[in-house]
Length: 396
Image (cartoon, rainbow, N blue to C red; front, side, top):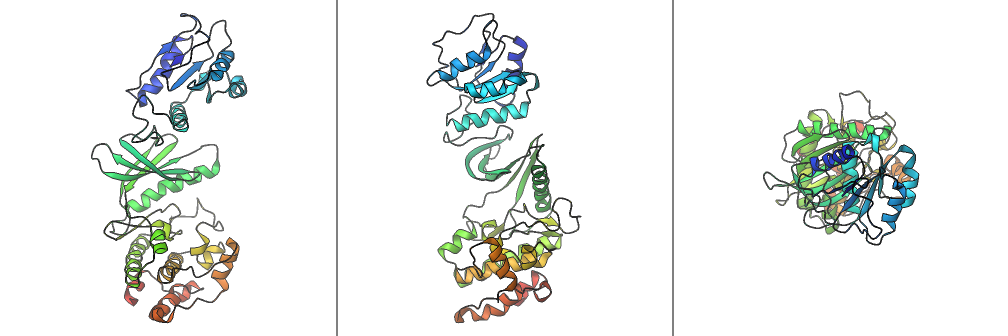
C-alpha cells in the first residue's frame, strides 16, 4: 500500500515495485484528497506500507509513529526529507528513503530484505518459493530460488532453478557497496572469477552457465554439485583408492587452470565438490589470480587463503606461483589418507610457522608407498617440489 498526498510520487513508487514484481497487488491512498486514515487503521492485508511525508495538515512522522505502535501492523518504509531519517528510525520505520533521491535497485533490494526478515509470504508470490524463509533476490530474474546455501560479507549463495528449463543450479550473488573500497575490490575479483573459469573446459572444473551484472550486483549461475564437498567426505572417511582417485582428478583440474595462467590460491576440501557419480568438481576461484596479470587488486604481501592448507611462501605473504597450489593439494592428500591435517596449532600464525619450519610428517607404514609423493608436494622450498600438477599423475 502506498500512502502519500502527491500523485506523481505515488505513481513513481508504484512503477518501482511493479517493474520487478509485475503481479504485485498495489493500492494507493491520498490522505489529502481522501482524508486521513482513522486511528484504528491496522494495515491488514498488506505486506508493506510505503508512507510518504506529504500528509496535508498532519505530520507524516506522527502518522508513522501511530502505524508502528499498532499491534500487528505491516512493515513501514518512510519517505521524507533528508533531515527526517533519525526521527523515522526512532518512530519505528523498517527503512527510510529521501523522497527526492529514491534509487530503483536500492529500493527493491530493501523491500525484499524486509519481507525476508519478517518471514512473511509476499502477496506477489514471486518473492518466496517453497517456504517463507527463502528469499529471492529481486534483481536476479529468470531463476526460482529454492534455498540459501551460505553467505559472506560480500556474497550469498543459493540453490536455484532456471525457470526456462527447470534445471537446478547454484547462484552466487555479490553486492558491491560503491563507497567501500574493499567491496569494490571484491566485486572486481568476483567478475574475474567468472572470466577465469569460463576459459576452461575440463570435467573436474565446475561448469559456468551464466553471468549477470546490474548497477550494484553481479551473479554467476553455475553447476549444482549434489553430493557435498570433500571436507564432509574426509570426515566420514576416505578409502585409499578413493584418495588416489580424487588426487588424480584434482591434479588434472589444477594442471588445466595452471596451463591457462590461473592460480587457485585457496585450495581446500571445502572448495572441492563431489558429483553424484563421485567425480570431482573444483569450485570457488574467488581468490584465483591470472599469473600474467599485474597485481592490481591484491597487494604482493596480502595473505589470502586458509592457514591449514597454505604453502609456506603464501603464509608469509611472499610471491606465489602454481607450486603453491601443489603444496595445498599435498596437504589435502595427506588428510585424505590419514583423516588428519599435517600441522595443527592454537593460532593461525602457529599453523603458518609449522608449515614453514616443522618436518614433513610421516605416513603410517601401510601408506608408506606415498611418502615420497607427499615429500615432493610438501617441500618447504618451491624449487624442491613437483614443478607441475601433471607430474603427480606421472608419479602415480
